[in-house]
Length: 251
Image 1 (cartoon, rainbow, N blue to C red):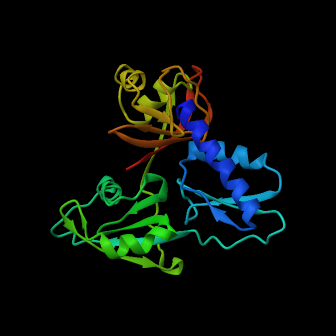
Image 2 (tube, rainbow, N blue to C red):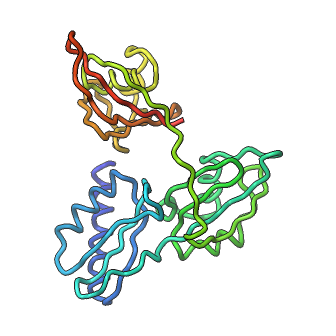
């Protein structure tokens, strides 16, 4: 994120903290990606007179909101998010994540009001700010060229597929971004470097343009237009001092 974006985000959070205290109520923020969420967490951690927790509608949510409430209040129920189930006929139409996101934004929904979009064979679950769920469910009937039906479902009906990942165990010379990108996405380092220097690579949702950036276990890697992976662990060294690395590539 740019510094100006960070300042706007933190100013918005500070306003929401003041509002929760002033109005004696719990409120839910917008959805934030993991990079933004860390900044929000630091800000809220240093705020007096409020408590908070984060959630995104399911256990492994990437995009989360924060529930902020005065210290004297009991912890509120996480009722700020609804789940939409979007169905289409897979015999006639193919729908992808970007199609659904594009349709929602084209329908007038801001990105910050949309959480994770979890795809399945012929349906998807979309986590969305509660105040917008009925509007989308009653008004949006097409995603790209596909006719869709949309309904708000209760959380007990939510069943999510396990993430589809490929486990990769190999060795790298150094824990550098270019080396790990090369191993995870099965390309040469010479091919990996331009992706990094041209601004197409993110680490934990932050843009990184230095091939020698040092990675740590748990870092999430993404290349625009290529895919996403995760550095799970370093697991010792070979006799020639290469690092054993455990990676996961999302497929």
